[in-house]
Image 1 (tube, rainbow, N blue to C red):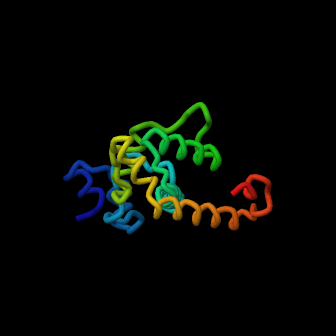
Image 2 (tube, rainbow, N blue to C red):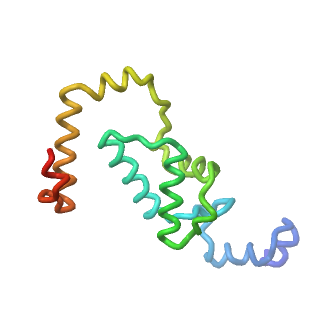
Image 3 (tube, rainbow, N blue to C red):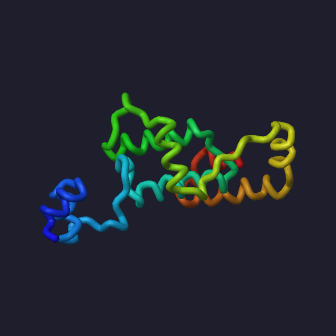
Length: 146
């Protein structure tokens, strides 16, 4: 059957069918809907940042995640400050990155007790020293206080 005849028989646009027959479009990778704002590498950078902050003991709220990603989009020139990302972006982001789960915060007294443990305090200062070394800030007045 010709492409023209198949397009008329199955009521499909001829160009769409021709592109698939000629191999211009891979049927396995085509998805419906809008293309994500960030490519996979850029989203991986955002995920790595969120994970690094979580390892340091700072978890972002959903709104803070959106704000960080919006600032990143502005830096890349993909958005303006006047057009921040929305909660819809966050929902799509969480679908694409299921390991980024949303956890509700616990009661403050439990968090305070957990953060006051000897292990957490020593972990904080180890991370602090690594950060100072990474950014060559060991000899600054602020770093010398500790």
